[in-house]
Image (cartoon, rainbow, N blue to C red; front, side):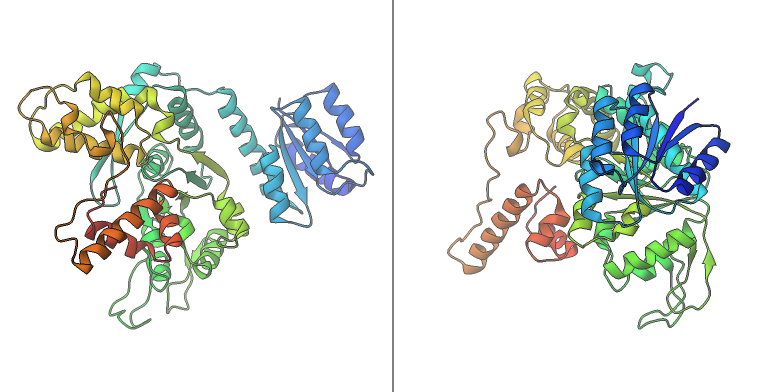
Length: 468
């Protein structure tokens, strides 16, 4: 039986939470004193501890208490409660290792959900529920799905510990209806993870609708998400069904959610809370039944601190977080990825390519892969396309940055450098590359640093032939 401790100097809160959680089958103790709570933790290990931030003990508050509890039992999930929310305190406490920071009062559903999430998180960390299948067989399996661009895409399960951990988290969270935040660098496969979660959920027979928030203009975002009525604005020549309605019964995946304007975030928060939408130009509210999965290649907590992302929306979405590791942390999986992508490219080309020379795999292992899985796929397309017949594929087919003697990305020589337009183009090319490297090829962050929108950056990458 899982054990829970409630620490709050208001006895009615202790009593309420004890009653709620006892009915769910947990063994619950409580204390109105932080000092007493520490003694209780020394005598017994608790799975989850709810702790008030402002205790009446003179020398101990929720922050100090949580630190001491973690020293005694790092496995315990600590949930700090407060009636006076402060984002800076929340970030500080989470960095110190607490599981969650919530606002009082809690209702029964919130308390039960928090405990369930904490126990799932513990199971992931302890690997209590690893998939029973043969690890090698699971590692070599490939999931196929249709991407938002209508392309047939694949997700390869890796063999390394980092990949197994990712797969374990997906297996644990998929059957639930929890909202999920997927974090990871550009090209790590966040959309693939969203598709895997959906395909293993109870909603798998319903649609998964994917929206790239980075490509939505401020003016049209509400229309794309919630739909609009005919004549709602200039150009609305017919009614449009939004993404929320399209995903009814299934899953809505919002990629790069940090790019939504503050106004759209406000509307999104209400929709998620109430599960109703109101199309632009309509007075009618429509009920929607969906699961929300969002993704970002930036730290949303930092966006909250900087005032670019609503804290209440962040906490509402953050029922579970999955961090997709970059390729440089999955080097043990490189041979598997290379073999799989080589087969995919051969199918695309309709011909068999030669074997990879050993020095190519050596170059792959020493490269940092700033573009992650997406970059590896593109490199495999390039070298297979350049290969002839069934001769071994050598390093001559590799792009410049992967050559055994790595050099800085070179600016291409543009004919007629004396021409002012060419000089300007060359300077722009170099500036964009420098900024992209500075932010580890995070396009959203690069666009902000250069004071342009994401769509303009994409256009310039295409014009200047910068392939990422």
